[in-house]
Image (cartoon, rainbow, N blue to C red; front, side, top):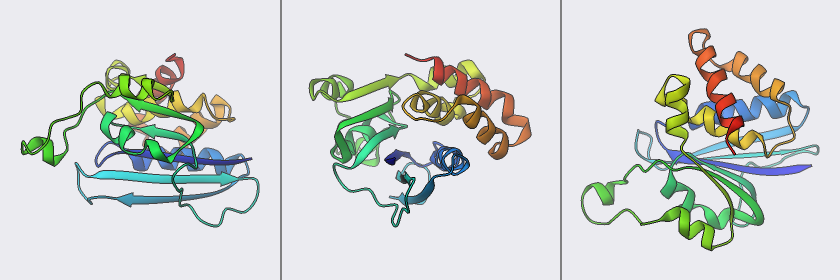
Length: 191
């Protein structure tokens, strides 16, 4: 099995933890995995992309080219739209419906695009749009949107829930375990 997954979002949304969770689950399942992060800006607010490639054979490079992603997990709506060309024709998009205005929108030089979910649907893309912020708040913290989205995305991967729960146990500080377990389960329950 060969899988190419992109995690995209805005700096400060927790893509690092998400990629570590995925990497942990994949390695524990015995696959070779490569993870690479590309930061548009090394601060909150900049575009962040993480490539995760895994296979039962050797993975030589983490880079994912256009048309190669099996799954894109997007923490922000516009970032999801920005990377659609990376999806395979039969790929899946899991996208948070949260809108974080990029600098051109903040300065008034551009407008945030209208009806991104409708445009994605019109393209025939297999997409799941999630109000991850509301689910994270239900779990106990708005900061858990990343784990909510991993819960949703985990339904597209061949790894048991127990593997994901073990990864949370291994990577999340003790004081945040209950919150993150709940956030993951709320994501898993999303349809």
